Amino acid sequence: MVGKIFDDKFYQKAIDSICGTLGLDKALQRCLLFLRNYMPADQVSLHYHDVALGTIEDFAIARLDETRLLNRTIVIPKAFRQLLKFRTLRGDC
View 1 (spheres, rainbow, N blue to C red):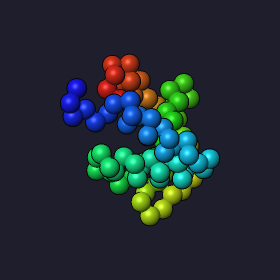
View 2: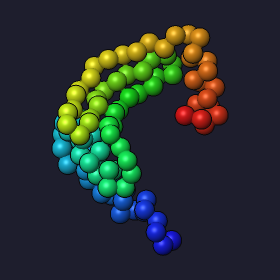
View 3: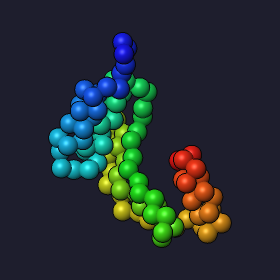
């Protein structure tokens, strides 16, 4: 398709930007710099939502001028867990 931005080359370059360094925060910053060639972006962050435990793990955040490794666990209140589980199953998030 003509004008297709997100083709195999795009994904390969994105993967290369992430895999080019061992530091997670620096990898996210490199990915951010790459993505800004295609879309507006000010930061990239990496999180993991553990449905079984009801937690969100924050790993790293990258902005243009700084990066930070995070070691933070957020416990999701029980009232919101069902909503998140329902939305995840529906495909909303």
